Image 1: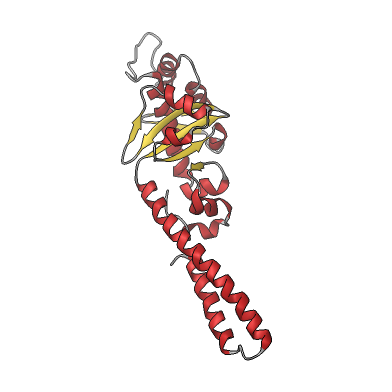
Image 2 (image 1 turned 60 degrees about the horizontal axis):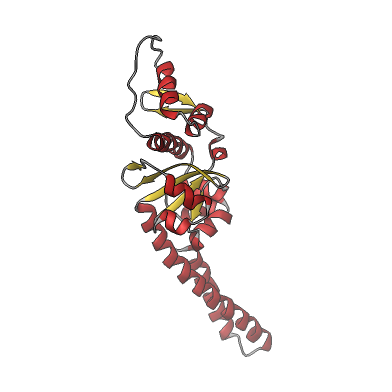
Length: 229
């Protein structure tokens, strides 16, 4: 049951009891206060319930994950049932720099992470290979990402220098999205989506009432507000 609804029903119960004692002035005053609070909580509970339904639909649908540093979008990808990597993020970079989140997310839920989001990680898993967090973040902002990524995987595979390795036909922005996706995957294997919002390591757009509550309540309350990992 919705947490706010439980509180509302509790206040209504107290209000009913006080109304039975309302023949005394002090109880009439207390009853008025409890009734007012109950009505406010009822409205809050309804709004939270409606927003919660919307949030669950957004979480189940396609989301836009963005890696940002200041006003600079470093990488982005879409994720629904499967990740979708963007061949050219030029338009997304322009919108992000202008804080035009409405056109950027195009009605999707947008999740913004930052390089500091991943400080708790050490190694990042990329299929059969592993690269350090620092190396992955450095590759994402590299102007020569395809060559440097190929070299990094070549070293991770312990191949001889003269042995060529065909790694990817992806565009630079697709490769940035793939590396960012690996960061997100490893991060969410170590925590939950709700915890990340609560700790401020994820910023969600639009925030709405549910995510606002998720960002301020104690972690023990999170399971009653949102179910996402």
